[in-house]
Length: 131
Image 1 (cartoon, rainbow, N blue to C red):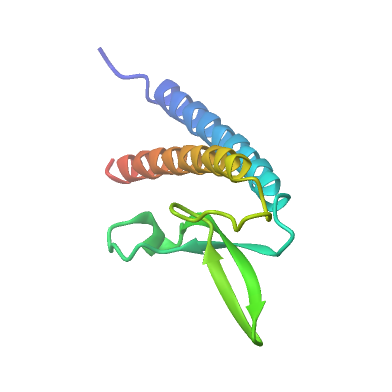
Image 2 (cartoon, helix red, strand yellow):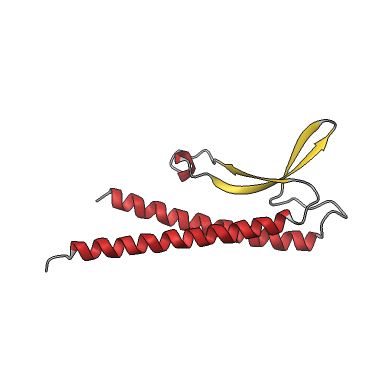
């Protein structure tokens, strides 16, 4: 039985469009989680995207990992950055640690969702290149 190539093309395009919409939605959710985290701190938070150094990773092609939050502090005329990830606890009196951990957990979940969806898109693109 012959394959309906036009039907398959349309199905593939619908699936890609759906995936792109899910990525956009996940990125909006991530931005909202990011804003909630920023609102906790009286100091400036910057968001950095990073490479992991693996040649085969998507970040080597420009799709960097992150964003990752850093708290910026100026001490003795120097800029000091504190990564707000695993192992970091806010200084006493700055932010309620439980609130920080809850919002940071939410942020990580949202970031991981974006990463999973982008990985899925990468796999789909690689699969199409192989045709």
